[in-house]
Length: 225
Ligand code: DHB
Ligand code: MG
Image 1 (cartoon, protein in one colour):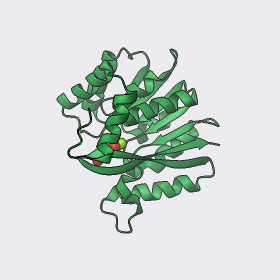
Image 2 (cartoon, rainbow, N blue to C red; image 1 turned 120 degrees about the vertical axis):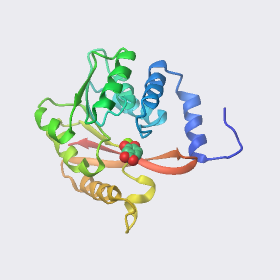
Image 3 (cartoon, rainbow, N blue to C red; image 1 turned 90 degrees about the vertical axis):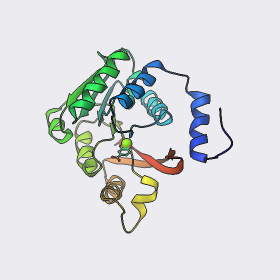
Image 4 (cartoon, rainbow, N blue to C red; image 1 turned 135 degrees about the horizontal axis):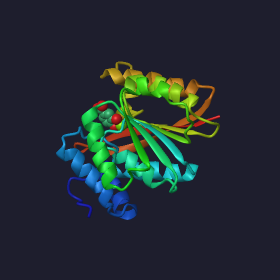
């Protein structure tokens, strides 16, 4: 229920979409609670973004997904739920404790056979991959996004979709003096996407409640030509 005191357009918009379109899901709830219990950083996508990834996976009719940055597998589980029975997700996580928590959450969700975690640095694991994927979700080190997308293109086919998290950072990417290092990396990344002749791209802005203030981030969405 929406509490009209302490009104926040981000908080209440997210709450509204959640209440209206997102029924309670035990596996996703377990993944969030277990990740919190094991002190994983609270930087996973939220439920509304999860449903967006789910919808994009269905729209694409994707059967194979590569994710970079598993964290507790909250986004991974959302993606896997949108796949047909024979669909597969490969997800890369460089921190072993996060990968162990993610595996518990995946097993709890009954998705053990659908999702494979590869533990290691994405830039070391990616060169070992050769199969193609229908959809990519990139949410790992912001300073490495350009290299990730270069690998994603190598592992793509025409029509593959590449989605990257955190590409607006509340206007951080638009400022002349970047407050944090990765704002500058992300600003460069967005220009790289726009200028990449292999891709057609845009950014979907997403409003998030962040510590009870309104915050606009976004996901880039690219299609491989
Ligand atoms: C951070 C990373 C993310 O992927 C995100 O969605 C939010 C914050 C971070 O490293 O701070
Ligand atoms: Mg992110």
